[in-house]
Picture 1 (tube, rainbow, N blue to C red):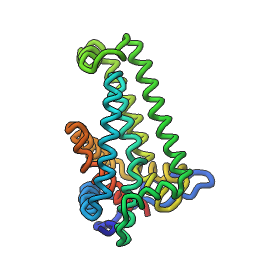
Picture 2: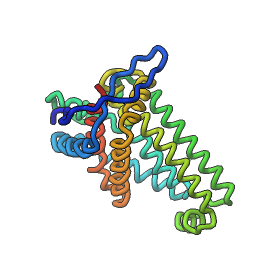
Picture 3: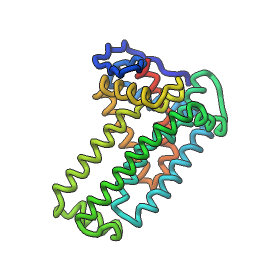
Picture 4: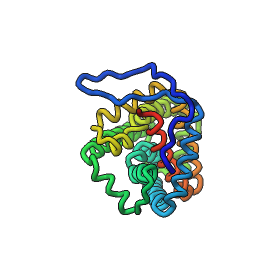
Length: 267
């Protein structure tokens, strides 16, 4: 499927970041309808590249299962693992962006060919991955310390952890504060990553320019992109509810759709 141009007039952005010595690409303001258009375009790209796309989906599902199995030994890591999954997914989906990029140019490539995208602008991708990785490590350490202050719950099984810490009501203020802090961190990471990886792959942008452009796109489209984030979380949780095997289909659609989001948001 070809790249999806805006089908309605783009609104004038009202927020522009200015960084010393850095020229950012222009960003567009979009309507609330666009996230659903991206999902439709993502499904079409999946149909156009079923083999490579589903291979990526299978890797996501297997990786997610391994993470969850490891986290079951330390229940406080369950939510950290899920958060980490959402945070690093944009980087891991780079191959799906490449499939959509080539499909938009009328080309068909194999799974192995899509992996070569990691060689293009590899330094910026690595630095972006480092930033996201540090955020995940910070959240894991913060969670470990926070739960340790409530007692040694890290060795309890998941059901005990959930009933004693999260659902008992004894630590209501802590749970609210913990989820709020995690939500704010996830929101910030989403804001600086929503178009970062596609931009680095498509235009060889450095990671600072890519993250700043992504933040600018988010600030100009807070409503539509919050809707997009909600759709991503809902569909991923739907995949988790199927022991992650639903991610075999869901993640390729979201990965392809994210490429079309980038094409809509960045001039």
